[in-house]
Length: 222
Ligand SMILES: [Zn+2]
Image (cartoon, rainbow, N blue to C red):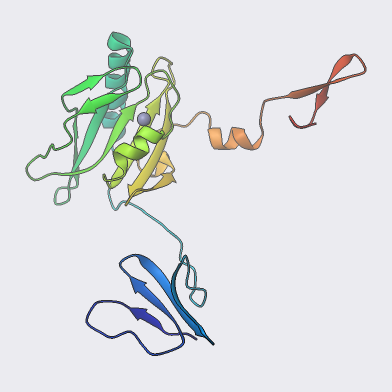
C-alpha cells in the first residue's frame, strides 16, 4: 500500500518513490520510476474504498397546512402576474418550529429576484421553495447557480395554473444537489402521479414508415 500524505505545510514530503498527496488542489500522485519523476493530479486514490455522497436534513416534517399556504401564494402570484415567486424557509432548532417568509421580490415568468441577505433573529434560513409559474417543477441551471452557495432544502413547485401542481424536492450541499422524496419532508402531501415511475413505462409511441404505411416501432431509432 502506498502512503497517503496530507500536505498541511508543516511536515516534509516523504522520500518514497510512490505516494499520494492530499493538498489544496485535491489529490496528487508522486511517481519516481527510473529516470522519470512526476507529481501529477489524479481523480482518485485507487487503494482506498469508495464513499457515497449523501445529504439529509435533521428537521421535522414541514406541516401540510403551512405548505398548502405556500402553494396558494404561488398560485395567487401566477394568477395576478403570470410569474414565479419564492418563499424562504426559516427554522428554530430549539423550538423545532418553522417560519415561512416571503421576501420582497421582483418576479416575471422565468425569474425571481430578491435580497439574499435576509436574516431573522433566532431563526436559521434552511432553504426555500420557489415556483416555476406554469412550467413543470424541476431544478434549472439558474436554480443550480442560485443555490450553489445556499446549503439546504430547495423545493420547486410547477404547474401553478393547474389544480394539481408538480413538485420536485432536493437538498443542496456545497453545490451538489441530491434529489429527495418530497414525502420524506412534507406532511400531508399526496402524490397523484410519480413522474419517475411514468418514465419507466413511457407513454410516447414511435412509428416507422414501412411499405407505404405507418407501423409502430419499439424505439425512435428503428
Ligand atoms: Zn427554478
